Amino acid sequence: MRVFVTGCAGFIGSHLVERLLADGHEVAGFDDLSTGRQRFLAGALDRPGFTLTVGELRNTDAVARALDGCDMVFHLAANADVRHGLADPRRDLERNTLATFALLEVMRTRGVRRIAFTSSGAVYGDAPAVPTPEDAPFPVQSSLYGASKLAAEALLGAYCAGYGFQAWALRLVSVLGERYSHGHVFDFVQKLRADAAEIEVLGNGRQRKSYLYVGDCVEALVTAARGDGAGLTVLNVGTDDDCTVDESLGWICEALGARPQRRYRGGDRGWPGDSPHVRLDSTRLRALGWKPRVGIRDAVGRTVEYLRANPWLLERGAR
Amino acid sequence: MRVFVTGCAGFIGSHLVERLLADGHEVAGFDDLSTGRQRFLAGALDRPGFTLTVGELRNTDAVARALDGCDMVFHLAANADVRHGLADPRRDLERNTLATFALLEVMRTRGVRRIAFTSSGAVYGDAPAVPTPEDAPFPVQSSLYGASKLAAEALLGAYCAGYGFQAWALRLVSVLGERYSHGHVFDFVQKLRADAAEIEVLGNGRQRKSYLYVGDCVEALVTAARGDGAGLTVLNVGTDDDCTVDESLGWICEALGARPQRRYRGGDRGWPGDSPHVRLDSTRLRALGWKPRVGIRDAVGRTVEYLRANPWLLERGAR
Image (cartoon, rainbow over all chains, first blue to last red; front, side, top):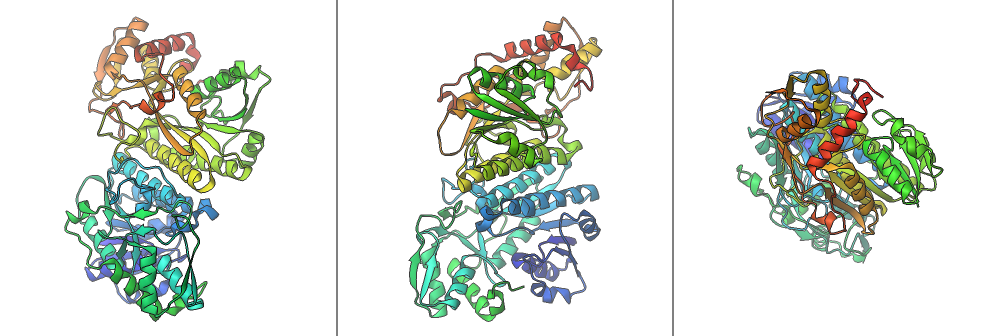
């Protein structure tokens, strides 16, 4: 199979590429390198089955050329950081919703109709039920990021109903592991490198979140895309566990041998639109044979280990 | 109060303008006249409290000028026809999602944070439960129109959470009444004028839909916007009744004295993405004191009466 991967140079994308190549597929990778990093693809670029196109999804000619001959698409390219939407509300709209639309249009006109998409548990807003199933009550959005991912899912649904697409939307919790390059573990490690005596914690530290190891995330994508269901299949992806920000910080400090004073910014959320409790019910995906292999504490540990071994990533402005 | 109304020259918008003026408000109307008609505003244009700006919502300077001094926004401008999305998938995205984003951005930068929005029951896709409540299970979208309205709702939710907006999203069933200028009654009347002997019916004629009289729709908008709830309030708007396409056609034929042979295109849907059964649970809105005054059969009758009295609307390409 020849597979098109958007966001192929990103944290999750680069792992997916390696997995697809290892499974014997050809991979046409596409990335604008705005947050992805070419060095994450060092291994893949040595393989004959891999090609990299550096470009933007709104450049439909470039997408069409790269998509040529592909059987399916893994669409991972996105603004993946939920926290900074309010500073620039156009970013989530453009990089998530409109980029997805541009991609779907190229797929439609080129006759490629199979797509797996990395959505997010953020689409549940402040979920009333935890763990949250896919058919939870119709949520109200609380972040521009969640809104942009939901809008992209909605387009997938419409393309399935109207143009015969087959699609999988995977609603992910936060992902951790090697090549992880933004989020709370990253921030804590970066802050502790600068000042091991004191650390600022967003919110009250009691926000509870579920996390997923990147290897388990890639396995979820590959498992979902093996399916032959019609229309749009929505699948939660997460561990059955969660931890508080305080607990996670404790594991990070332990790994780094740091004992900082904790200073809390206060409130029950890390930022406006943050959900104080995130855990997803992944029963549907488990029924397809998937299960997570790495627990949250271990995923945090591997992430810290990776960041320690790759301090270049922690430099501000590192590319 | 000074009120900004987008889509003010449209079917529903022009009725809302008259109602707001009658209630003593000043109205700044905005319309690009792409489907709205200036003659629908004949009465309003004679009133000193009304101003009309002809322009597009993506022209943010024009929107900002017209919005100046307004306390709240009724956002009705949209591609309102659910049926033709597949012929041009960009239209719903641009005219519904992106136009809403452009408007929200002007509101945010100008400090106007109160908005009522005409969403649609189409966001429920193929709803598993009928009548469908607002907190129905998280739906999968089945039309580009529904997807575009859901994306707009999602933006409203994010602007409420992130920027302190107050918003009301009214999920409407199809609306009928005076100035109605697209939809199944319009199509049937137009077809019967051309050929009273035979008529084509989309689907099998057994699709069941709820309809709402335009006066009741305006009352719902005004009732909702009186609320002082925080964040995004979602409200279904529809009668507690429904009818089949066949029944509705029967009433239309009776009003027109026509006895056409019915020819069915077949299938349980009128078009790809059509939902075979639409009826919404409006309990939430009723709890605010609203109730519909006009039943479906009467609404169909008034619509036919209006179209008979205004044959210019039925001319193809009429403006």
